[in-house]
Amino acid sequence: MSFQIAEPALNTNDGDVDSKLICASEDIAALTEELMTVRASTPNRVVLDPDKVEQGLAQLVLTVIELLRQLMERQAMHRVENGTIDDAAIERLGLAFMRLDTRMTELKQTFGLRDEDLNIDLGPLGKLL
Image (cartoon, rainbow, N blue to C red; front, side, top):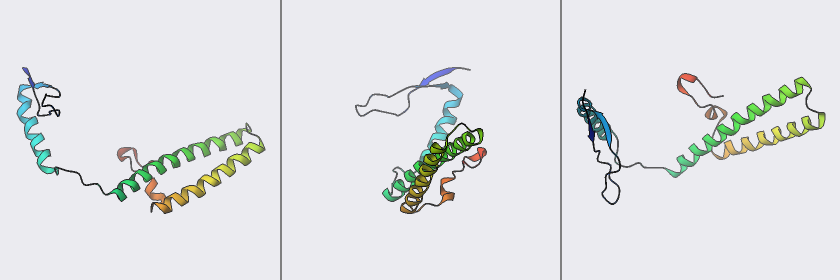
């Protein structure tokens, strides 16, 4: 099997080649054909709707917050069950979780999200939450 260096058409603004690709010579034709197929099937520019980008970002951030909330809640319950936390700390945690729940509800309403929207599908791993 022989190898050769192929210079892809990835140019910087000043016209210099950005990088080089090393591959087996018999794979170059197959790679070129694959790249042309992908290029033909994708549009030349991406149109972004600012409202959807904002909602998608909100969904991601709220999903991370919900995941962290559930983890913190489980840890708090574990500490309560083991007796490693005093009553004052239990009260503070309970109040903090209630405030977080209220704020999460407000943010979900603001961005038009439901609880199901925060449970991202991770493919073969299943649902996140």
